[in-house]
Image 1 (cartoon, rainbow, N blue to C red):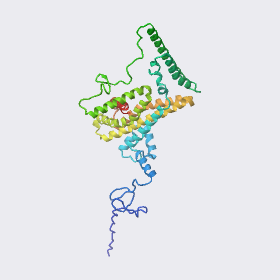
Image 2 (image 1 turned 90 degrees about the vertical axis):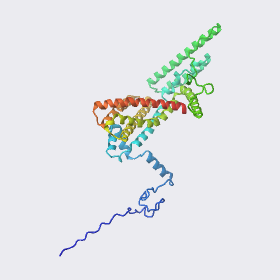
Image 3 (image 1 turned 90 degrees about the horizontal axis):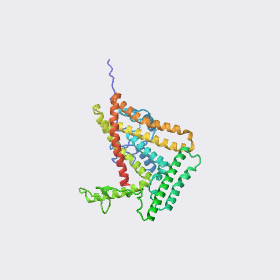
Image 4 (image 1 turned 180 degrees about the vertical axis):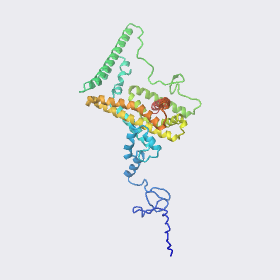
Length: 403
């Protein structure tokens, strides 16, 4: 007798996954479909909106922008010590374990330039005492009493710095040289004022002032000094409001040039505040250079863009390390002179590793020989240096005209 074995008919899976305990009683506020998770399976709207606790919203914002989790630590070490590794991992499809290239680029860009601005604000003598070489105070004094007052004012700060206990000998020597320069300028100015008074007493023409110069901040337009009333900027093919804006920008630039000569730090900080956005604009051009140089590799532009993002993220990380080392060296000069040599050695190592890393990254990602990689690396380096130079000049002009 034949036995018939009945095969159970397979039950098709439900159209929607079974609702878990926390979603069982919820419905989508947009389409009314039952919720089976944090997103509606029917229309895709998330269950969480903006109407909730501020702390929860800020947590999501920070996670979206910076994505700070364990992936950061898995990304930073390979980024700095393994040229091309993150890029090749991304190309291979292993993406979820690392921070995305754009977030890495954005995060390191902001942190690096913040650290650079902090390092510039730590009383570097090149900026704190920059006015010692300026021809604006002592060199423009018109009487001997003015010279004496201005010299006393200039020397007071230096003498105070020299008297600080445990000041490093190199810094003391630098300050002593600055003091000697001030005294020489004062002697030269007193000699000129004496010769001028003697000439006037004899009824002769006074000798020309060696420090006389055109007005600080003069801007030339059409071969003549710019003046908002007598000689304004006027481009015939531009509308009136555009010419008015150009003259406003020229006025701001003139004021900022004068201010920068008195306090260069302001201009430097203004330029650095715009550099992240400048490099953010220029970074896609680096990917264009890669696309042109490696045109026969037939890679998509987005692949070159990933290389550009990781390259710039590494550059920003190097700048961050250099800023940190600069701050540590400033601290070591007064607190731990014995470790200055170690910090200087690390700083030199960071500078040396920078071009070597970019070269090795280019070779490992594009897999060409040493000779071809060297040639293409040189071409890209020269072209991008020119582009960055124009970018920095543009940032400088924007700082003068828009600040």
